[in-house]
Amino acid sequence: MPKSAAPAPRGSRSKVGGGRVLMWRGGSLWVSRDTGLVQPHAHHAIQVTLAPRQPVKLRSEDGATWVAAHASIVMPDREHQFDGCGQDVAILLLEPETKAGRMLLARYGQASLTVIPDDAVNQASQRLLDGLASRASDATLVESAQAIVGLLAGHVPEVDAVDPRITRALDWIRGHLDGPITLGQVAGVAHLSPSRFRHLFVAQTGISFRAYVLWSRVSAGMVAAMAGQSWTEAAQNAGFADSAHFTRTCRRMFGISPTMLDRGKPAAPGG
Picture 1 (cartoon, rainbow, N blue to C red):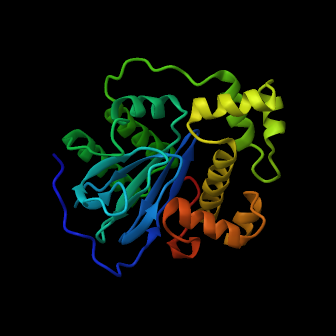
Picture 2 (tube, one colour):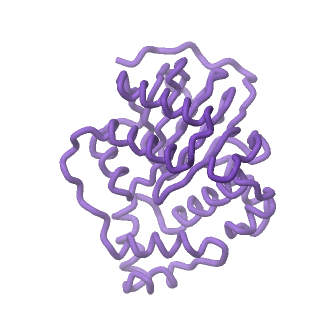
C-alpha cells in the first residue's frame, strides 16, 4: 500500500519549469525546479512524475488522501494534484495513443494513480536529472526518458495498435495547430464520414475530437513558450484566439497559469 503523506501545506507557491522542455513524437519531458503546490487539473496524457532525491506528494482527486512517491503514474484525463515539496522534479507526459502509452495503460490503467516503488526506476531518474544538470544533449536526455518508460512498461504483452486512420488524423492535427481545425477536415484526412470519424476517434483515443485538438494546442503552446517565444506568440502560433483563452486552458489542464512558469535560461544550442 502507498504510504500516506501529510496534507499539502496551504499557500505553497506553485512553480513549474526552469531547465529544459524536450519533445518527441507522442511524448515530452518537463523539468520543474523547487516545485511547489500545483492546483487540481486533468489533461490528455499519461503523467509520470519522477523525484529521485526526495518524494513528492500526489493525490488522484480533490479530497483524496495524499501519498508520497519518488515515482508515480497518473492515467490520462483523470483529475490529480501534486506538491513538489521544493524538490527538482522530472515529469514525462505521454500520449496514450502511442505504443508506449498503450503499454502503460495496459499495466497501470486499473487505477488513476499508481506509486512505483522501483529502485531501478529511481536510479534511472537520478541519472536523468544528473544529465540535465550537466547539460547533456537533447538526444541523450530523450533516450534516458524513453528508457525510463521502458522500465515502467516492463514485459507487457503486445498491445493493439491505434487504427491507422486515426494515427493519420493525429499526425495531421499536430502539423496544423497554427490554424483552424474542423472535424470535417480531419475526417477527410482519415477518409471517413464525419459521423463515423467522430465515433472511431473517441473509441481509439478515449477523448472527444474537440478536446484532443485543444490538448494538442495547449501542449504546443507551452513547449513553444518554454523554448523562448513570448506567451502571446506561443498562444497565437498554437491556434488560440488570444492569450486569455490560452491562460484559461493552461490552468485547467496543467493546474497553473502560464505566467507562473519559471522559464529559466534557454539551453545552449546542441547542449
